[in-house]
Image (cartoon, rainbow, N blue to C red; front, side):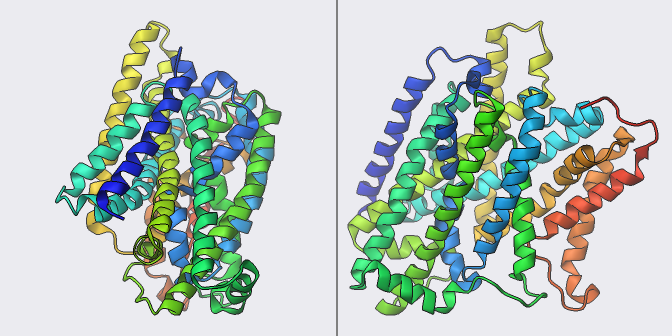
Length: 488
């Protein structure tokens, strides 16, 4: 495929999103930007959330990760199921009961001002870094296969991508994203299925034979029993549950879509339907990863130095133009939901949690709109800068780095919400930011020296659980005997 053809495909897909944006953003208001007027059909939200949760990271990084981690990621996915059950039965009822726009305002009700701002800050930090990681993957592929051929700098490529996302989310907000996510999920799933079909066809096999080959290979290893291994199945199972809780249940981006449903019952149906589809899709992605490695061995293809590059290299340079086109559409479909949702949720959190937009009755609707749009542009610029910085320091699979960072930044959120939900203590609110800062620092030190301190034990994704536990203990030390700040 030539760079021109790839660019035309990218622009055609983007044009489709702008059509959806035009249809969904008419008569938009600040409330529809944040919550879609609470009129989103639950089944549409559930289906669209697949694309948002997978993102370009899962689509491109997880298949390459199979080479070193095998199918062990499936234990993380099984853990997700338990985490989503907690979200549907514990967190969603709480959010609907309090009628929240920003989920972090719960912390103000429960503990006070500083706890609230600490929670919102950690979300903004987590989502900014996470969204940048995800967008980096896609932009880097566009750079390699399109813009390098025309000697266009990486910074300009990122700028084009960010501007496009900014334009189609600028007006419609969450209402637009719910419907664009649906289109993007469809294209992503079609791309996965078509990629697997093209690989199987190129090897002269049928589906049953490929399933047998994958099952018989070492790539299908799912359960690792060495307790010191980062892939130890119990670590991944528990980590998956808590990753789901924090990266979905305590994440404004993902919960904003659930809160746009008509009722709690619809939001719960959305969450449980999404869970079932998510398990199947992740298994499909791991199967694709094993198929890519088997195809590489079959064809004698030298594996790329970075595992993230395996899927694009094989699809674009070894499977023919159709496979390259299918991969590109799938990657763009997986990338846009994580980018547009992140930008919208960051705008929502900052506008509500730090600018108190929902409390300022002295501002007109147009004044609020102007403030929200300025915040939207500001976060677009921040994402641009972080992506450029990340390219300079990236040295391993993005999925691995994403979960590592999540362990540090989402841990305090986990501790704060757990303490609020499962104890009746109030805390010395002004000291909460210090606890939330110390916890990741302690975790980093323990992670760096765990082999020496714990006789060979290496922390994996369970670092998130440890971080939340340290925060919880710190809040326990700060507890007050006067009881709850107010009932929640």
